[in-house]
Length: 93
Image (cartoon, rainbow, N blue to C red):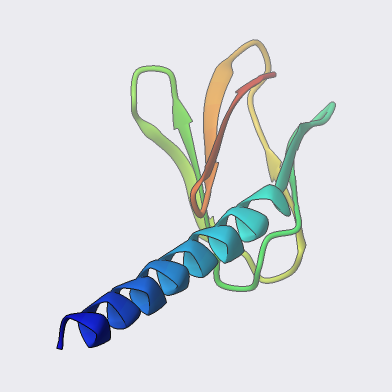
């Protein structure tokens, strides 16, 4: 009985590691760039939520990605926190 539990535990552990690897790959595929007009999100999956916050924590913009490249206009001379899925980045514009 103990051997079966160990094998099961190893299988669950491997599944967790595989899940983590797949999620980190997905996260690294998303790129957030500053542009002259605001922010460009590259590699978003359709339905990913793109959230942009000001430095005081206020939600500035939120939308679901409809395509892999999404451009969001931003006001100049501000700092924003851009979140796409589990990827978060500070962006000065």
